[in-house]
Amino acid sequence: MKTTGTQWVRVLRPDTAARGRLTCFPPGGGSAPFYRELARHIGPGIEVTAVQYPGRQDRLDDPPITDLHLLADRIAADLAGAPARSLFGHSMGATVAYETALRLAAAGQPVRALIVSGRPAPEFVETARLHQASDVALIDDLERLANDPAPVRLLRTEPGLADLVLPAVRADYQAVETYRHRPGPLLTCPVVALVSTQDPTTTVAQAEQWRAVTDGPFSIQTFPGGHFYLDDQPAAVAQEITRHLS
Image (tube, rainbow, N blue to C red; front, side):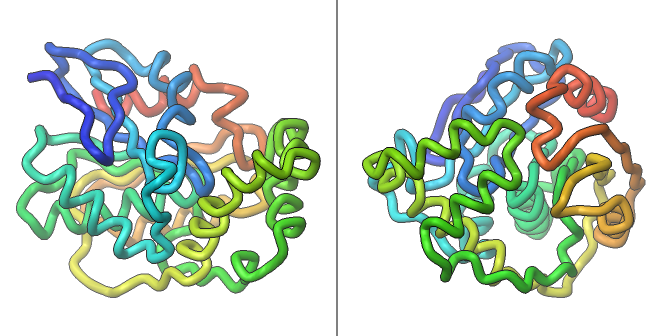
């Protein structure tokens, strides 16, 4: 069965004979094509899709969503009824993927696996309030996290580009900074946490705490690099993901 795109989902690598399906959730400020290179390296027989949040690219006219729970509600409703899949999310996308997995499980459609990357476990409370800060402060933080800060610096010199990009970034920061975990049933699927050794946003100990969200198996894998380590080593990250999906 072939997956087709929806309002919320973009197909990055179709596979009509897929034995597994992976849906990826972008980081804050990101869009579905963020995972295009990763999708290219995922093992054969796995169809790869990615979520497209509102307020960016082909959904630029859709108002951004500033509540992470509401965001997960909308995504889970869009995914409901689709073939069983695994979810992968990096940074903000990890929390959105987790909340989406909870909603799918509650609807009787549990995911096969949840793979999270570069994000503390849901009980973590973000104390920063960058979504209330200036555009300059937002750009500073994006530059701090970027592997290559040069493209981010364009936001300082190209006001038209900043006007397109920063509203979605600010909305995503608000969704993350105001998110609070709601206690409820545990997941039953395997959960895998990926974390890099020099990520300024997530320590290995914080990644270990994802163990508490499931009654199923848990494992953790570390990679060298900073917050966007997967940009530098998509093949290695894809290999680890494929191993768990297989």
